[in-house]
Length: 190
Image 1 (spheres, rainbow, N blue to C red):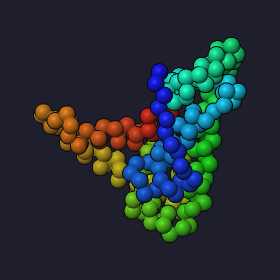
Image 2: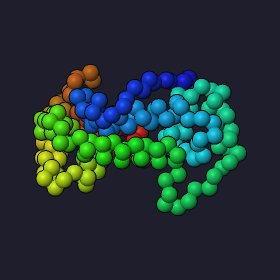
Image 3: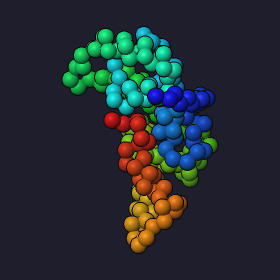
Image 4: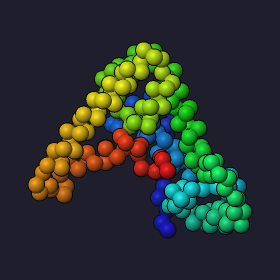
């Protein structure tokens, strides 16, 4: 496989608020890519399907070969109910950290302004954030999800109702936005 590298330069969830889409998804995709690129040979003991292929895609071939050889030799049995993938566990821990980080920034005027005017969240991250915010802010998250749901529904209906959609039409992005809204960005959920 040919290696695909990505440079990751983030420090805070605040860096992702001005960008389009769910800021948690964007940050976690970069975090996940960074972890796959920087894992040392002895650090990984279990990988899910997605992260095994991701490691193969981003690591140098000799490093990936050593990691996979060790994993094949170890063959750690999977326990029922436990998350078997080391990278999935790291992503989940980072996700929790970043949700708590955003909650801690809610009193800031720029963050409260973002939440009132520009916020875009996928349903999984909105629900996780909603469980952590003060009760007074939870209705805003509900309204944000309802507004985005209405906009997506309108975009999807327009796309559905076109008799001969053009393959490069900008509206096709609604399909990807709907997928992200429902289940997060590709590769963040099993």
